[in-house]
Image (cartoon, rainbow, N blue to C red; front, side, top):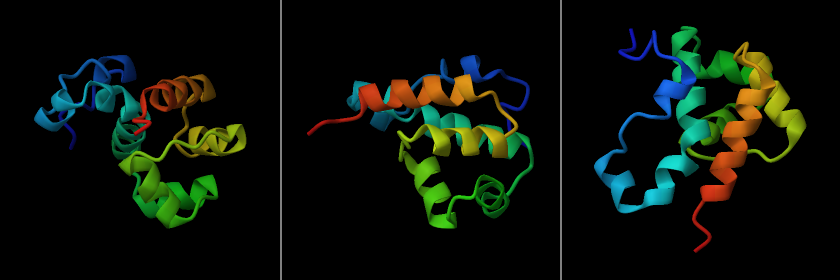
Length: 105
């Protein structure tokens, strides 16, 4: 069981960054969607395979999502929200934050 199970998505985003993320300030915000998706899926006691199936994404795409890939396509964001029984606005806002803070090296 997750130690964050009873926390809202907004409180999850306020968790302190890890040592690696502290060295790269934008990394914390760039990973906001990945953290939310992974935590929300776990809170639902859903496997990665089931989440991918419900969303219509390939298993590799869902793994990429939880590793930091940010889909810009609104249909994909809707599919993720549907699989997680989440409001599309949460997914869209976190995707926007993540996109705007990704390293453009």
